[in-house]
Amino acid sequence: MTFRTHIKDVAILKNGKKRIKKSSGTYELYGANGKIGYTDEFLLEKESIVIGRVGANCGSIHYSKKPIWISDNTIGVIPKENVDGYYLYYYLKSLRLNERASGSAQPLINQSIINSIDLNLINISEQRKVGAFLKFLDDKIETNEQLIVNLEEIFQTLFKHWFIDFEFPNEQGQPYKSSGGEMIESELGMIPLKWRVSLLKDDTAYLSGGTPKTKEVSYWNGTIPFFTPKDAKSSIYTTTTEKKITELGLEKCNSKLYPKNTIFITARGTVGKLALANKPMAMNQSCFALQHNENHQFYLFGIVRNLVNQIILSANGAVFNAINLNDLKILKYVKPLQQIIKQFEEMVSPMFEKMSLLEEEILTLKELRNTLLPKLLLGKIEIPDDLVGELIV
Image (cartoon, rainbow, N blue to C red; front, side, top):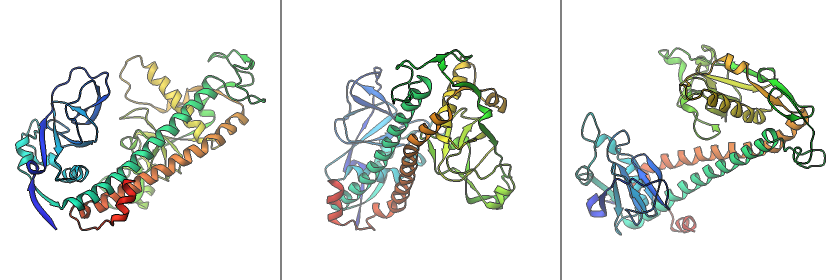
């Protein structure tokens, strides 16, 4: 059973205010695109929903349980006691508020537009069940994302310790350089004894991609993920892609089907972004695929990321809008002994496998949430009371 109402009956609306000082403080500062920093004061004291009011992020929806400051390009929605805040948050997200904006040159949503929207809500007890269930899914997704960040930071720390600071374990298990390990001169500075400077191309295969004809319907909307620079996100692994091609499309383009853990580097568009394929996928011509000759992909990932950062830094503020094959072929790095590389690969492989599984679980949880959401909001899926109790605990 649902009932009709309006925002003004279940929430208080409050326009955001401009906040100059945002570099420090304990309270999160929200803009139309979400969290943008911190400040030393709050504008909304309790649970609130933040709606983007104007511009490119007009109609965007964000949620916070804590006291926050909201900028002048947002509207705050403070739920009353007769509505569940998290349920209302997802209900508002489902309305596509950006489509209700006024103005052509500069989209705008104001309180009048929001208050005029008819809401068709389920009763408060069912709202709380739905809100608890959705919050549980989102918290699990957020936990997984944070675990991935933590594992990536551990990997970066280990890589730097071993291959930049040269503190890999010596034969006695002690840090090599600080334990008096012998160092020799090289064109890249002092390096450990028996290590050498090598061209990355001597140890790595650089592979290219291609795009099947975009107007040929039989090549597209298949089951094969098709990686482009747009698919290089902040996370190490890419599991899904914006576009997919068919088996025939793969046959008709210059890309191979690259296996899991292939390294993709974006050469145009968003230049220098790295991603690991979390499943076999093809790739367009704006990227390169890198595969280590000895299949030490995670070690190679660390090497390439470090080298790409050096390329970008060497641009000295110039517009850095492309990487070509010659850029990659001249890259030099300090190559360790084979047993050191193997030891490192064995150490970090479980971390990457865990990140891979966490990424897959995030995708599964998001698909579950998005599939169930329309029916949950209308009360067409009953959530047992005992399950809600477990979720809240």
